[in-house]
Length: 165
Image 1 (cartoon, rainbow, N blue to C red):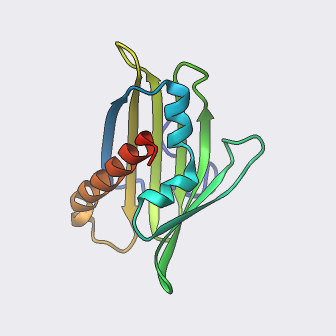
Image 2 (image 1 turned 180 degrees about the vertical axis):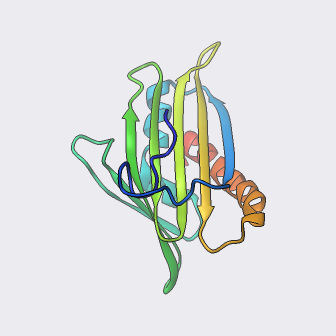
């Protein structure tokens, strides 16, 4: 997939996250077929049940996929923030390979995430989750720490979603 168009979309000003960012990649193999793995990973509301102190809401496009706006609200009471993400690319697997890309467009978290699924050698599905993120107001030297924490959190999320929990 092409690089990020920026937090405001193509033609709407420079990307706010063109510089260094926390990057991570999660790779899993599951016995699930590509369609079921995709369904579980893109059931956005379920993400909120796997991430502590987070609820997820979705404003759906028609049909489901590109144009959906997924908002993760993390925190307690007034000490919370929204992480709005727009699905900017969507290719359902239909028994083969599938991918989607979300652009993070919030006031606190910027960046993008990509999810890819495809048949694994020997059966099941190969899953790759890639993400680049930047937490506004955090000093850039903390990006490696943010990346490690996010990789742990989202690795746990992917595992739980694939397990149906």
